Length: 93
Image (cartoon, rainbow, N blue to C red; front, side):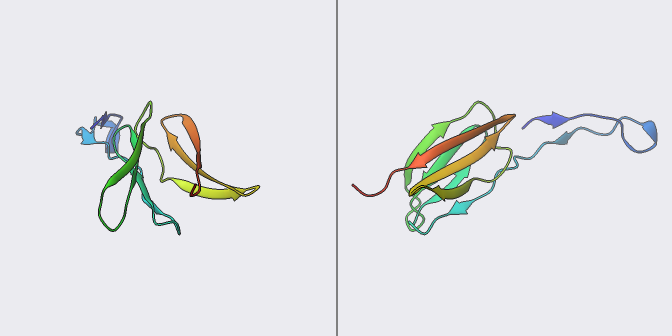
């Protein structure tokens, strides 16, 4: 984990505190669970925990994944560091 530094209460340097990942969890009606760790966005089968897909990102997730529909396509977006990543979710073929 990264450590954060700065000035603490009263101008004294604070003790180093671990910086926690800021990702979250997204579940979809299509029975997918998306979450991330220190640089990967991962899709799981919620009932079994099986990893279905993953994508390595340039940084740790800085927010939870979100999903939206536009013109009949479903999109997944997530922030990591100072980047916003967008993916399309393929339907059943």
